[in-house]
Length: 168
Figure 1 (spheres, rainbow, N blue to C red):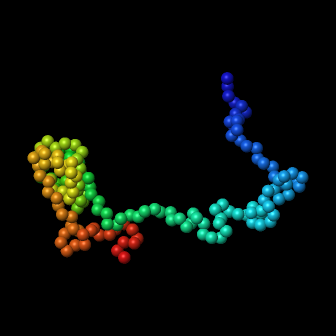
Figure 2: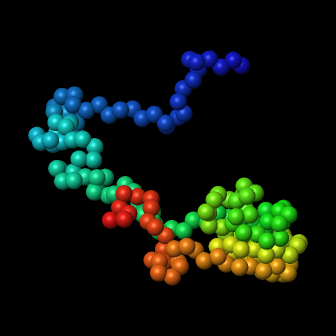
Figure 3: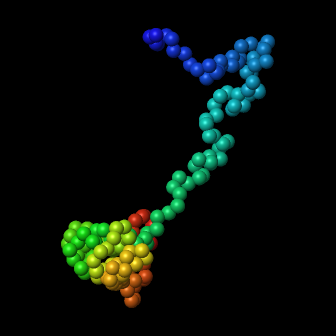
């Protein structure tokens, strides 16, 4: 059977017949058509969300939730399988930068994805516990590099960045 456009019809019950109001005083919904007498609502002039002149709820509630921590320390993650792919035995952020794995002056964190088969001497800013266990289990050593903003005489946190309210 071929379907034609004039055969199409909405699903039963999906369309409601509109209520006919304001058709004379004889019926229940005549004259004022169920809107009472006079006033703003009787004249159909109330905008959606209007709350009588007070600041509407949608304007009182702030749009943006939470906040961005301007002192967040961001690390570049390097996995063990990346380290095992290098021919170096001493791994430092400078070595990783020379191989194009991290950016210059990036803080490096070693994560535990992959395996280490050879002895590695790793110098990084942070190391996960599983990665440290894997490196030391293979006979290597892990040395943590102190973050520059945690050195003696510094504030103990990185310089604020990232929004309009920082450094005020």
